[in-house]
Amino acid sequence: SIGFHSCPGFKTIIMSPCFVFPCLLRTCPTSPLTRLQPHAPPASSRTSPRPASVHASASYPNPLGVHSLIFTESWTSESAGAAVSFAARCGYDLIEIPVLPGAAAVDVAATRAALDAAGMTAACSLGLSEETDVSSESEECVERGLVFLKGAVDVCEGIGAKHLGGLLYSKLGRYEAPVSEKGRENAVRVVKELAKYAKGKNVTLCLEACNRYETNVINTARGAMDFLDRVGEDNVFAHVDFYHMNIEEQDAEQAIRLCGERLGYVHGMMVTPIYCNVHSGGNDA
Image (cartoon, rainbow, N blue to C red; front, side, top):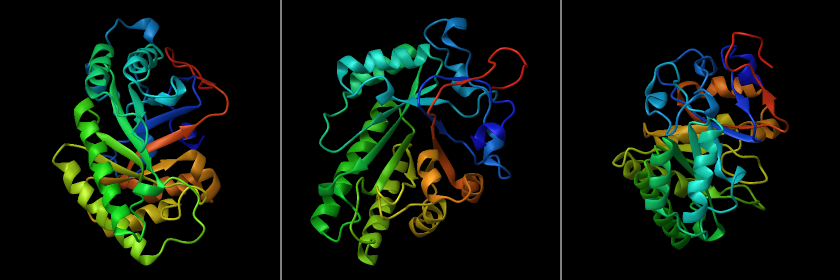
């Protein structure tokens, strides 16, 4: 809850257990959290489709989003429209779409049409599989991972998503040993190459720090900063998640401040709904 305590002007209604902030922090060197602002009015107080000015206005610098898994188990041509429409009616600015190895391919045309109709934006996220793990010592596995990651960037470009986050550097799953130096070098090399590819498509990469049970490469904000230093590309940022920080960090606020201007994306998790005063200047919940 640290983000809410630090942002007295942040008034919204969180009805789902997962929400996301694509953070545009490069204009705020002092405190990443202070730029979180009220997002768009609830669906009941606006017309459809959602006005594009919501996303461009200086009054709403950080879009508030929701993961598509809240609404649908899979991202198909049929479910895309319903999920996007529902997210827009709930008042979200953005919906996060998973692009996972082995899953059905995202229907780019249908997704883009649904987003445009609702006036929504999107972000994409993923976790690599055993067969596409770019932190592997197997060059064949690393190459498969790079091909898959470039395909995910292509999906982002096709649907107009500006962020690709998650585990872009390793498989999503438990490892039995620490990452080897060769494996780490492979991951850095792939992310560096992917960043150059993504830059040409106006896509920002955000590397999610996950708990030790889901990756052995980046578990903390400090680990993310070290990895970013090794990658050395200006369109690669950290992605933090309050669930994972609750396991790995001693102080979530300090972890966020450590990332500073290199924090590009935030996942928040709520066990119960938070009700806040949307319209008046009353007390936050």
